[in-house]
Length: 301
Image (tube, rainbow, N blue to C red; front, side, top):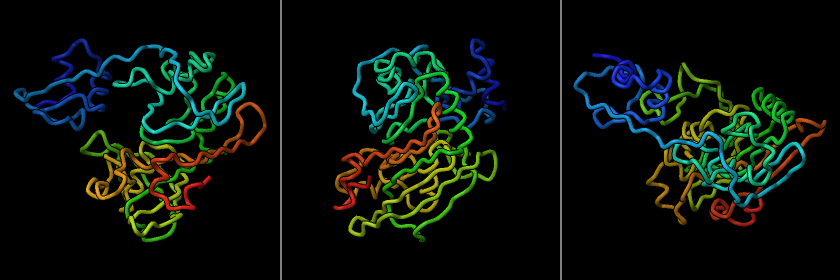
């Protein structure tokens, strides 16, 4: 028996250890047809071990003329209402057609700002999560926003989630550790150790009895990967349309069928990173989200 990562290094000397670990974490390594769970997994010499390399990502994203729903813009920052389905920055499988590509065409001055692959980006939304995202346009704004989002001070992020069922309480506070799922490396989970503190305050805004779903507002004090999706699933009320943590059978019973996870970043507050000014923005849910809300609930903003 041998460790998976060590065996892969022996067989692929052109890769570094960190590259091997990244491929395993990204789900690009299989053992006997099953996605490898962890770098230290024990394998036999005779096991069928395969690496599926992700497509290369351009070192520097190129500008692309794409529409942007701009909520606010000045010389230092731009706030965009990101549609569901749009990836924030280039990554394996999404080398072009991202929010960053569109931003580079709209405000080319952000090129090279911060990380070259993610110019101006200080926080992210999942591909299938819609809503507000702020991007830096200057070096000074970048430093200020990175500090604010890292410390979570003076930043308010509120999401609307459509969830199956109804929580036992009308509101609550969740504070626990969220980290990589111990078996499925593509998922996050509430864990006892080796995770990061995740804090979500939630409240039920409306229970839509005829559909058996709840409209829940979630205010997050941290920004862990899949945080709201994991926390709502832990309450037994997963986000509608969530293919990773949700309930596909209950999704199929809904009309219209949810084509994506019904999670929307609807409210954002922060101090301007350059001027001493409090900024506050809202974005109403898009039509696919509002389709489940009976009037007059749709105009939540």
